Amino acid sequence: MNIINILIADDHSIVREGLKQLLDLEADFKVVGQASNGAETIDKVRELRPDVLLLDINMPVMNGINALKKIKEEGFNTNVVVLTLHEDREYLLETMQIGATGYILKDSDSATLYKAIRDANNGESYIQPKLAAELVKEFNKPRGVRLKPENELTQREYEVLSLIAEGFNNKEIADELYISEKTVKNHVSSIFRKINVSDRTQAAIYAFRNNIKR
Image (cartoon, rainbow, N blue to C red; front, side, top):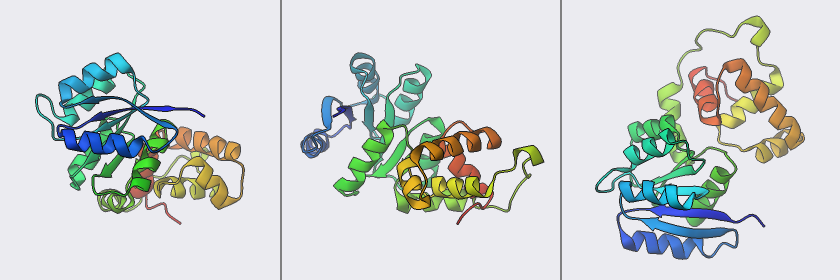
C-alpha cells in the first residue's frame, strides 16, 4: 500500500485536529505535519515534502493564495488541495490557475475529502461538483477558433475530453467508455498535444470554453 503523506494548513487548531482525526481513519493516509499560517506552511513543505497539502485560503502572516504561489515558484512536487469556506468563482479560478490540484469546501463530506486527496496524489484535478458549475458559467462560451485540420480531435477524443471536463479520472473514463486505462492515457496525451494544454484543469477549461460536452 502506498502511503500518502499529508500536510494540513489551517489557522484554526480545532480544524487541524479534526481533519487529522478524520484522515487517520484511512489506512493509506498519514498526516506528517500541521501549519497555522502561510509562512509556516512554506517552511513545512520545504522540510517535510508532503505528497498532498490541504491548504486554507484565509490565514495570517501570509494567506493561502500567496503560499500556493511560493510553493509553485519553488517547484515542489506537492499536490495542493484548497480546502476553504469560499465558494467564490474568483478564488476557484485563481487557485487553479496558480497550480492547485483540487478545490473543495469545508462543508464537504469525508468521502469527497478522501477522493480529492487520492486524486491529487495521482496528479488528477478534483473540483467539487457544485463548484464545477462555476467554471461552466465562466467558460461556457460560443466555440472559438477551430483547431487546424491536422489537429482535429477524433470522436473518441471528444468523448474523453468531455469526461475530463466532468471531473472523471482516467480509471473512471476507462470504465465509462469500456476501454483500457492505458488507452485512456494515450487519448489524454493526444488531446493535450492537440489543444496545447499541459494539465487536466486547462483541458477542462478548454472544453467549457468550446462547449465540448456529452
